[in-house]
Image (cartoon, rainbow, N blue to C red; front, top):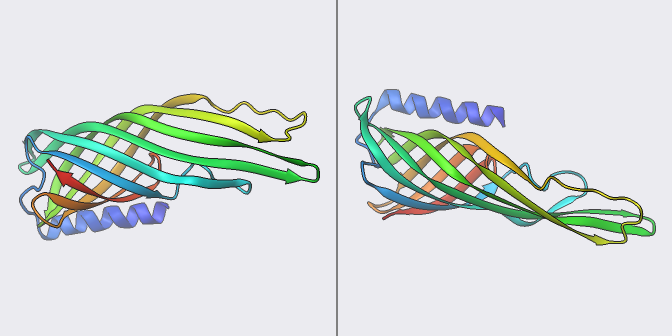
Length: 188
């Protein structure tokens, strides 16, 4: 994962040095993006299986422009969801837990154009991870009380490629509902 993040950052900065363009994300712009995650900290392990893959939706508005000439600051919200189950089978015992993680929070980002039609950005997220679980099967005397929720924070880098003035594809690396998110979005 570290190699993938390093490669992505180096590529973004190399492209920026070669060819800077006008911003695709400008003061007052509002965007909505939806994505599906690849690789997640939730539902991993020998006995775990994903029941709903990590999905997310984000909203962002550009609130300040002309930072370092072409840079733009954006703020917005984020919601991510995934569910998985942990199942253990051993002789007469067949038990486990079903988990749901919902991450809700706010994001701030800095956008700087690197090539035409590509909005590159990095930022920070702070929110709350809501965790719920239910047990199933013949648990016996074994008990487990999962984490019921906690603060969530992360850093992220991403890019949005605009197919037209309004529609874009997105790719984001970070520590949210998934490590890598791919998706589509629209500029409102």
